[in-house]
Length: 105
Image (tube, rainbow, N blue to C red):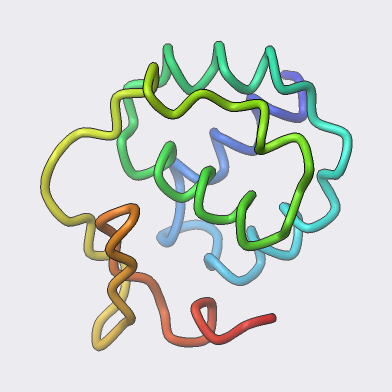
């Protein structure tokens, strides 16, 4: 797998097999992902949770390549994805994440 695809696969397995904090630490290191491949993978991906988390984490990490992604062509589905008990709701991505992740800078 490419790093882009492997990361999406990890997100699909979270938070069951990987904690969201662990995955975010990995995202912080993914500074050279290829925007065209990321765009293609996000458009083809059927896992709504993984797509929302990918975009959220990339923005949170402050990666410059995220500005090249056209969210208008990515189906982010409807309804909340609840990923943490007593978590923090992120309105832009309609996800509830652990407070630890939301507060992390």
